[in-house]
Image: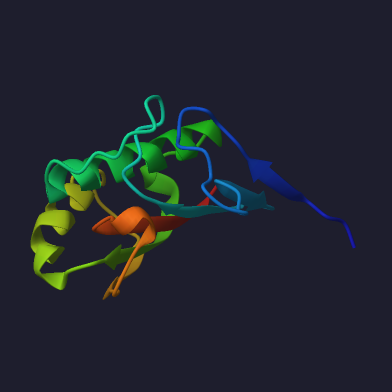
Amino acid sequence: MKNDKHILLTDKAPAPIGPYSQGVQTGNLLFLSGQIAIHPESGEMVMDSIEAETHQVMKNIQALLSAANADFTQVVKTTIFLKDMNDFARVNAVYGSYFDKDFPARETVQVSRLPRDVNVEISMTAVV
């Protein structure tokens, strides 16, 4: 069986903080690991507000998609992890601004804790 697994790695998005890849492409599927609001150049957390945090997460995802020659129009599935479901509407407004139409399938769940005590983490799957 042929292994067509390609590891995505770019310095335009935060380096992994554990034993995982930023993304993995196999065939025409691109799986992006969950992103948190780490600024890729400074390594600092962007947590001034839930909106600023979500924008940084989405910018990190955008950088990963770009590294794979893809964009948000190719995203088919998203998972959003929230520390507090009360932030749902504000996160949703920022998230939605990155898509024009034909939104991907998605679930949003509240979790008790996220890496580095962030408020939001988002992962995506795209067809490339």
